[in-house]
Length: 366
Image 1: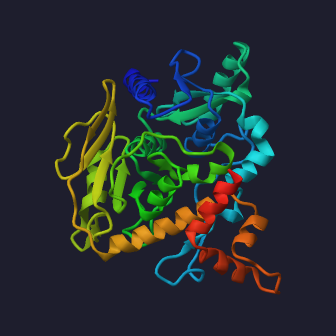
Image 2: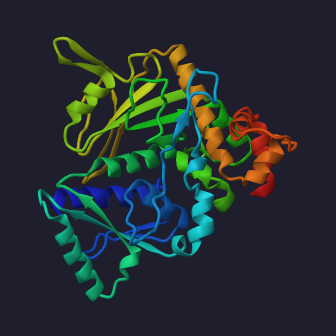
């Protein structure tokens, strides 16, 4: 691995552990492995966001969900995570695997074409040194910090700042699909009032409440529960990220509108390695050999489009909270009386559940 990339990752993970931005990880960065993960929740998040390897864990932990327009009122589609394994399913099926320690090894394949051969060689060497290959996750890099790694680190950082950070799940009511969005919403306020969240959370953690309990993070004393952030992560071309955030001319007849231009987001950030004060028009989150650099974003003008996106995301968060419950428990909340109805009707009833009823039920089962 190129020295600067390795040093950037080492400095970043070390600082994040020291400042309690990340937990349950020991940064090793030795010749054999780079991270030792001894926390079950953190291991699950790494498997969800960094990479799936069936030799380490049998089933992908999905962080993206199908949607349906007809379930809602037409303002935005309703996403429902139940057609894929929820975290509760993963826990019931494979908690014996999830409870095992995990080692992470970042491998720079550069411009190599035959990565499978190189990977086989690496695994053979690790096995000869006594490592259990079922406990080593190899995360590929190609001469740079890949976007999935940057997205994961960004999610953790904005979680630390008190947001629900949502990677892969961005609002349909906004401009296209950015890398990451972060939210302080009315539902986050209720989660704090019910003492289910200290400050912020990675969105997938909302599925984990029944297993791990309260989401512990740095307390956030802000009273603003109506804030939206959009983030673009770049590996090696930060100018491309600026274009995505603020807009650009693809050609003389084709203008690509920026994420912040329709009034959905209060703030925007560019995430890229080794940049400082790259562009004063946006906020900056950067990782370098010196550690983490953060510069606050200017505020952008918002309008009713922000209101739509916050309603859409809160509806998504509500559905994710529901994944902590069994189907019988959900039917109990909607007071299903056994009359013959279609499954679509039940889904509509579920979508209309008042969120306080869900939170009350969570208090019972957690």
